[in-house]
Length: 509
Ligand SMILES: Nc1nc2c(c(=O)[nH]1)N[C@H]1C(S)=C(S)[C@@H](COP(=O)(O)O)O[C@H]1N2
Ligand SMILES: [Mo]
Image (cartoon, rainbow, N blue to C red; front, side):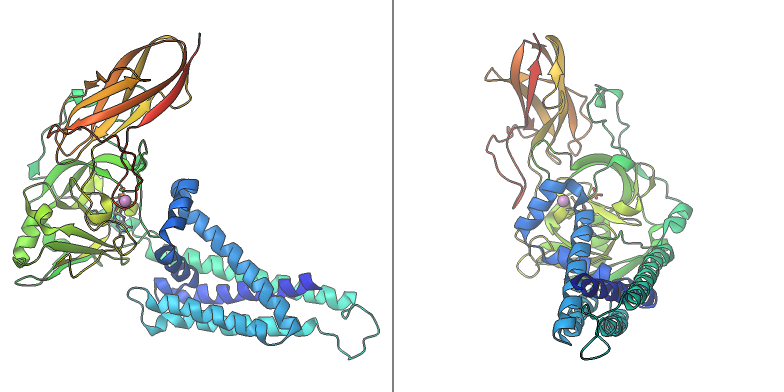
């Protein structure tokens, strides 16, 4: 019996979600309870938990989140079904409470008014009605039933048919709602029609020697399809060029709003810049190098005329993410840009289509806002960006780092010549040397790939005469100012990990 009651609860939750997801088609993206709750969880997860989830599951953290939410919803709904039968209407109240919470999550998201609560609340009415109807069927028809179990096998079969039918209807409605919603929003058609402007100020050609082409070593330019992706977006924001605009406001002489077509008349710049995530652990792969096409931020900001008292630009994305960059950094002459192209294509949708920021020398969380729609000129003592509110440092200059790509950890090697190779980066300062250490031996200089610019990573390689036994290989880089990468082992929070990358290998006899 308890199973049937739990089933009533679960089926009712499916009806609730199905109705809400279908109705959400008419009330904007965040009126979907799954979407709104998921984003609320992302924004409110304590850092420690977030870190351990990311450590454990890598960048599958979003999938993990959805699975956890689904399990939590099923368990809660099952409990609601059970308690509704014991003390009515506690289960219904539990349902209503969960719905109010989901409605709050919808309404509190960016760009959704009170109407955003309608789908969840309508779903709640349907879900609670379902719960009461199902639970009533589990009650004995007479006070002293002739059979002990309360329901007869015929009643039981009828109940199951009804429950399964309703549950299936809920699932179909929900899947249909999500699917139609994603089709309605999808901007890949819009992206396919974009013609990128020609680059006016083209960066120097990338020399052959920038890429050492060592097997197992990251290529100098990272393919768009392989470029790491980090963001808080559960569903990739879909922003068409018609919908997109960039408002520059705050401490400025004149607020301006740029539309996509306005960009066409402006001078373009093309630069190859390496992006890095502050959450990249030592040796990690949250770093990539691409050729970006865009517009100089300094020029766009100058059109608005920033106040001399301002020291921060708070960039905001379509989906409410914010990053705070020092105004000084955006205007000091480096190639900080509003990028619209990545490696010869319009930005891929997950990388910020149609426009994002790229700032050489700053970690992504304080600079690289994707789907960017606003630049608010402000001050660090007045505004706090998304990750700063969550305990990360307000400022995020990139720390000098190196990585060993080959050989891989725990590789089994043959004695003799082994190529140790990797990448090193210190954007806006450049890399002037990389050294390699085997076990506790001396630091030996590695061969560097041809220098391209101080804003991109550099490859390095070192030929090692491997001797039998276990070995530890380490690397360290020196930046363009002569500063050696620090050996201090520091975690990614609050402003980026440090320490030497190490790889443990076994060389056979
Ligand atoms: N809208 C939005 N932009 C964002 C983020 C985000 O969560 N939302 N994350 C930032 C972070 S932390 C990084 S490291 C870079 C990653 O850019 P990529 O996904 O194109 O590699 O995007 C930045 N821009
Ligand atoms: Mo990041």
